[in-house]
Image 1 (spheres, rainbow, N blue to C red):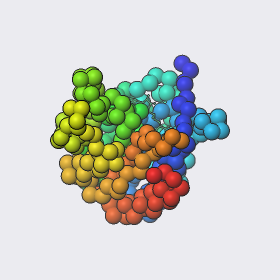
Image 2 (cartoon, rainbow, N blue to C red):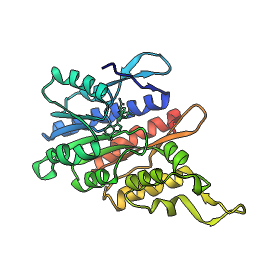
Image 3 (cartoon, helix red, strand yellow):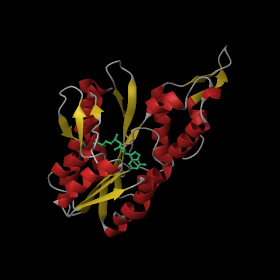
Length: 273
Ligand SMILES: C[S@@+](CC[C@H](N)C(=O)[O-])C[C@H]1O[C@@H](n2cnc3c(N)ncnc32)[C@H](O)[C@@H]1O
């Protein structure tokens, strides 16, 4: 089966740089403390992507993790797509530390992956949740938060949300989109956060801005999932200055927060928002 590589804009290359820098610092710190630490890529893709600017293949998150020094003790890669899983299996042929799962990560994370990263077993994990859209279940996020052993990067797909869920004319929203949003958010409380209570002069509810909505999700990561540290997310913007997604980070460790704040600050200065 022939894999189709995704073509990625510069904002996604910024995300990859952020993950590369954090993975390196994370692995060094945990290695120096003697922790068994793993890398988890739930929406892994085939390992590489095509840069829109250079037209060349660049390492995606799985290959970035594999190149990280010092190495992780285990790598868990999950994808739904047959051809992408074939590529991931090729990576696993030469590396017995890689485990590849084919299927919906919302299930395999909970049943096959997270049980290998328990706090009480002195294990720690860096988990990347990078869906295209609203394909992630809150259950996964909340479980990761409560495990306390997991640091998370999470793609909050605001473009998909705006297009399909937060439409001004609520009668045009498909019930399936509402269901996907409830599943991502964990319940239907997003509706109160997304719209101000008063309608405007045309009878439509007024939508809050993207940043305000993303900050409501930040509070949810803290207050409901129980992550201790969730910095302000980075808006990943395209050349039209439109935010495609927010990159969130969540952790239980103050050192992780310090490291990620330094990285986020650098990329905010470079214009990532
Ligand atoms: C944005 S891409 C990931 C790119 C990757 N993080 C990288 O940097 O190379 C999202 C991937 O998620 C996969 N996917 C979509 N829904 C999924 C699900 N429920 N479980 C696992 N993988 C899924 C898609 O096949 C696609 O490869």
